[in-house]
Structure formats: C-alpha cells, structure tokens
Length: 124
Image (tube, rainbow, N blue to C red):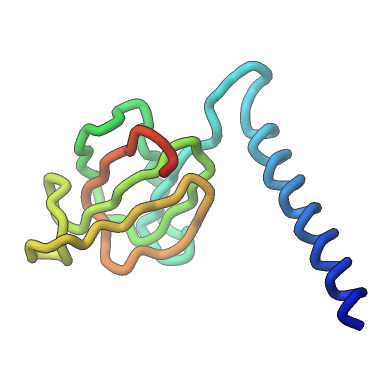
C-alpha cells in the first residue's frame, strides 16, 4: 500500500510541477521573460477589486490606492507588503519589524490590510 501511495505522490508531484511550468510558459508570449505578475485583491481569498503590482519599480516604495487583503503571485520577483504607509514595518499603526513577503509563486490572505509594498531585486 505504501508503494502505491509513494508512486501516486511522485506522479502527482511531477504532474503538478509540469502544470506550473506550463502555466508560467502559457502566461508569457514566446521570447518574453515576463510572467503574469503579482496581483493584490481588496477582499479575502482573492476576491474584490484587483490591483496589479508594478514589478518594474524594484526597491521603490509604492503606495496602494486602496487597502488589500489577499494576493496571487506568479512572478520572478518577491514583494514585501507593509501594513503602514511609506513601507514602514510593523502592524497597522505601530512601529516594529512586521513585513509580509509575497513569494514568487504563491497566493493567500494577508494578516492585516496591506497599504504599501516594495519589489525585491530577486525571488528570495
């Protein structure tokens, strides 16, 4: 029984990895290096209005026009999300070291409404 499950997991993992590679490839025109990108949403679970992150402004603090609650990322860069204006770390209204990093291939809800962000130089 363990052998069958192990084989299934290996095949499923391979199919998932292939699908993700195809998703990345399908989202970009031939020869283009740009992936679909990072999109923030005003509601939880990627609902509400969508706000596309500008990934070309690496290292620059960018203010969001409206607070965001969730995200979807398929990009070659990670994004730091801040809960205070001016990319100031900390929980909303406080100083601290809290910063939420949106990975290059991820999705989810933010712990607090995000109000500013900064694009990292690479997907680390």
